[in-house]
Image (cartoon, rainbow, N blue to C red; front, side, top):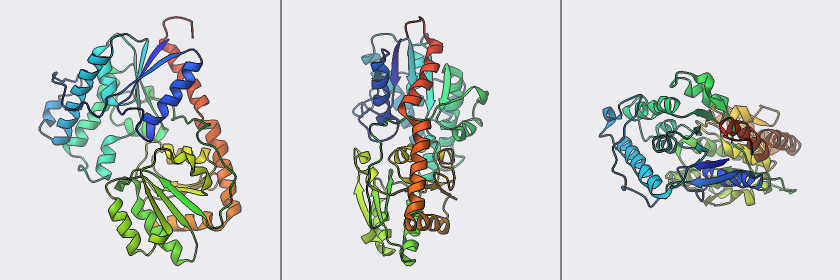
Length: 378
């Protein structure tokens, strides 16, 4: 069976699905499955010129909006690049972005196309202050879910929570499958260590949606209570200057290390103690699974797919979104009690191994792929 994994970002991009798929490809290829990757290079911009139309709505209603126009141009670019680069057929195409799925089905209508919806672009834009809720951009982006349902052969998403979110925009939500992201156990694994001062870590893009302002306020409260800690903040983004200034004003700059972008944070993530990320929205929250596989105690918000990974008090702690006192109390609990912290990390590792290991996810995907195979070879 010859399968194409159709991405949006190139595989060398940090984090998320783009960095996960090559490891999945390796597992499949070793087992005799032919799998290739395809994506749109960043240098391809403004090349496509073909007209774009959808079957379930008229996108021209939103024409003239900068975000919509940019999305449509990227769609045209993906068509141009696909026509230029793909010269053979596949038994199955598994897409990981709406543009990739819709373009592939347009150009290869006889090939089964599966689509995994990994995240909500419209929620990200709203939370990051780029668009207004209930505005034309959100209407356009959410209309694409119905278009995907109409044209893709199978919709999959990464959490039950996000499946419920999609239910408002499709006609048959029960047909949406749920397969979480998988993580290579060889990349993420615990390392024995002992830190005299509790080491907190977060890994994310520095944008408002991640709730890092709430984290800094909670850390300031920790310091006031006399709880020592170091926060390692890995990632970059548009609000980094504001966060650094906030840390100075809260008198916690000495307790925080701003690393900026890092290609392989998993190389030293296991040497920390607690992973914390107070996101305001997460369809799945891959970094929580990565941290769990490194044996860290988890602290997250009770939103999106995070509660599907964290059972409060069992393998981590959950707090409400934007609740500074609750987050400070949770951090104080895990930072001040090494035995409790160790037990949370141990159980988190067990759960992640059983639920999110690459081996398990590969088996789940094989079961779906086999539905579309044309022979009995694999």
